[in-house]
Length: 212
Image (cartoon, rainbow, N blue to C red; front, side, top):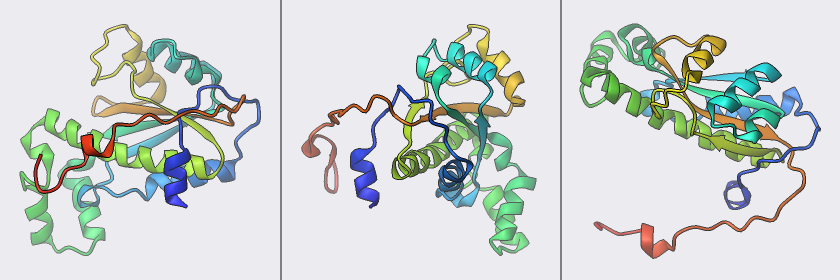
């Protein structure tokens, strides 16, 4: 069933007026919550947006992409760099049953805690983790029959687009300076239904054994 969802998933940008139930939405969110993450740090937060004013702002911040404005629901996927600090990361490790010495070894490790290498590396690895959750949610949306489009092109610390919208979005979503909006999931039931051809590189172009 997972492979069916992978094969059938597509970017959906036009939606009907049919509302997404809380039950379906919660299943999509739960898929993101259960996604794997490096040392189980889970450096993410998901903000559900139904308010049209906020949708309109996020659409403007995303270059006017109409599907952000017209989606039934948006899920804003946020990387939280404070997840890597001693308190928050340590709490997760303690819940895993690690003793104080083991926790300290991981929290201070340059290999296992990217925040020890600086803010940019922490952001890079946090974005990596968020994409796992995004992938899980898109597949669960497909399983639930909900169309989904991932929007990564938006005004934020990653695109460095200085159009005045990035700070407005931060304020509207109540994000602090260590929380970065990475992706927006636009959700809605597809209308009209379009049979899209999935174009991908040939296996020989992307799959190698032992080395390139």
